[in-house]
Length: 177
Image (cartoon, rainbow, N blue to C red; front, side):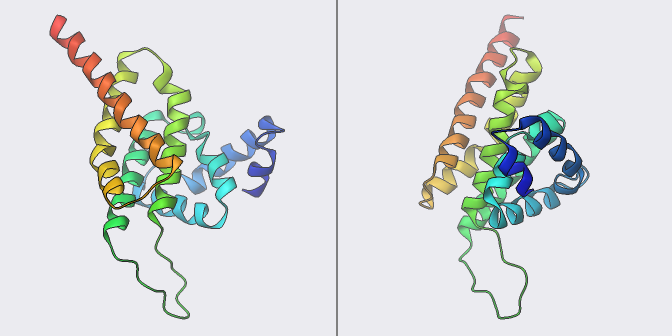
């Protein structure tokens, strides 16, 4: 993972190959909740590597799975923000993810969608954008209400806005048909 972060800007090709190898370990398609837990853990330990990996996720995994991940990570961030943080007991290995870590991976994965599949002017892209926008809307509002402020949260707010616009476009197309 560290190699991905180091190579991301200078040797995108080699870091892309490494990311393809790691996608099954860090983004298991069959287990969405595990995807979110792995993402939060990776971001907490190696934020640059996590950003490099999740920033190209839409190139490595099906767009629908990436969209589902963005929604699930946003929902998890919202839930974490509502829960008072507990202090870790000595000797306890597990540390609950922070809402800011979850927002960071969700926004980074969303950015990979926005640069790739969502950039297409197709019905599928509009539906995917509307799904993400609808899925993160209440989560984003809860995070704003909790006082979280970050560039990543602004990225998710963009997802809500664009999802609403794409959903509106889809409704207009349906109405005219």
